[in-house]
Amino acid sequence: MAGRNLNLNYVGGQWIPASTGKISQSINPADLNDVVGDFQASNAADAEGAVGAAADALRVWGSMSALARGGHLLAAADYLNQNTERYAQAITRECGKAIVEARGEVGRAVALLQYFGVEGSNPVGDVVPSVDPNILLYTKRVPTGVVSLITPWNFPLAIPIWKMAPALVYGNTIVLKPASATPYLGVLIAEMWEAVGLPPGVFNLVTGSGGAVGDALVGSDGVAAVSFTGSTPIGMGIAASAASRGVKFQLEMGGKNPVIVMPDADLEQAAQVTVDGAMKYSGQKCTATSRAIVIGNVIEDFTNLVVEKTEALAIGPGADADSVVVPVIDEASRQNIVASVERGVSDGGNVLTGGGVPSGGSYDGGTYVEPTVLSKVSPNDFVACEEIFGPVLGIIPAADIDDAIGIANDVRYGLSAGIFTRNLNAAMQFADRIEAGIVKVNGETAGVEPQVPFGGMKSSSSGSREQGKAAIEFFTETKTIYVNQSAS
Ligand code: NAP
Image (cartoon, rainbow, N blue to C red; front, side, top):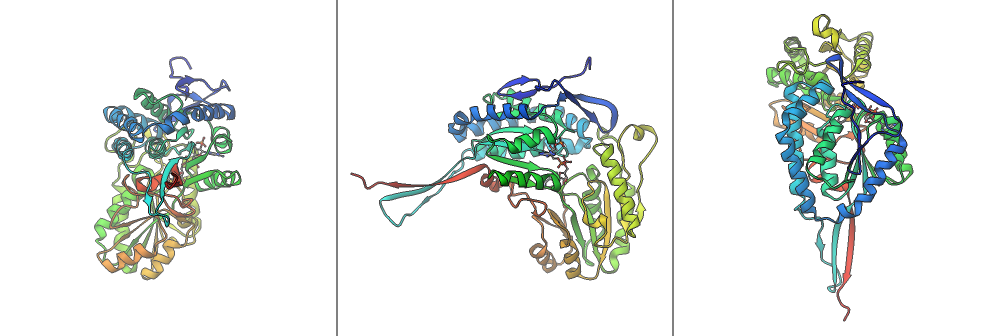
């Protein structure tokens, strides 16, 4: 361990070790010999300690002016802006993301902090006429309480920020458990709050496994709400546990995002945007494109263009400015992706490009997978129904728009979906009938803006929405107040 950075939990404004005395490592997926750092392998008692610190801070923080709370967020936005390169390099090193996209992620976090910083000066209720003229009748949003934030590794800065920015501005205190693969970004988020002087206990960080820390943060009596982003199976377990205790929960989960290619589409644009959506960051976005449903006889031209553009993609470490397809998060994920492609072939799919693991040079030191395009995929095949979370695109033929929308909707997920067409009627029909929380017309399924609601339908979400004006719904409770002014 000598010479390596030992990172601590951040609880009640103090940097402290876990009670377990154990550490776990974070590894750079582009270079498996590069240990990013040693982090606290905390347990349920450590999680409880952080919940206690958050509960102690709640009264003061919750009763502070929302404008003052927003000021902390705006200071954090400035801090991140000034430290963009340090945070972006850390993202690239810890989760493998291409540096261009990592800088974009920091920019997005800055935008979220700015948006919710300003939100501190917006109304938190309504005055409503009463049937009795003596009654002042109004609603007021109040903080929910201590909120657990449980987050995935793929956006290790933006996702925690898009939860904590609204949580904080509306007066809650929080405990963050980052993914085990990306604890360093959790530590850097704690450093940000410490640097801008957030009062002790308002933000707390506990690193450790989902089974130990995550489970405790869902089950703790001191927690009023749980906001989770991650895979659907883990999310469903959290929902069951939270619901059984009457605790509020918010889940954003997996996707199997389709694009529909109409016969009148600009095929060049459709192919480029589809490849970007499927292959950038090696398909490791919940909103990544994983199915292209192509109508009519343009399928051959579209497929050729997709294969050509996929083969032109640079595969390499995120630190190289040209890399588009980067290593996937770890060896288990790589094996899962390769096995999924094999299953696609045994189901009758045809690998047109990719399907394997690149080798030689720096490829041998990281967890790379070739970007893969499969044709002859049937709607019920494994690769057409299940989230693979890798650079894998299945091309599925369809007869007409009804058939295509039917195929698109015939999965349990409903996060993001797109259509490529010049036909306004087709686009609007698609927008109305597709079962997805995010709809793109001639745009990439991935890529969203922070000032509008984000979330999915069906098994992609618990039905709540994050970001934009929607965020207030989860992070506050509404009180309805009747004031009788007739007393003499
Ligand atoms: P994951 O395995 O579900 O983990 C997500 C978080 O849950 C991690 O912090 C994990 O901790 C924790 N966790 C695991 N078991 C737990 C338990 N029993 N109780 C409480 N917490 C537990 O997901 P991931 O692999 O990190 O991320 C990829 C998935 O996230 C994909 O399915 C992707 O689609 C989804 N995602 C969705 C969105 C969206 O907004 N819809 C955005 C990004 C990603 P450990 O890391 O310690 O296991």
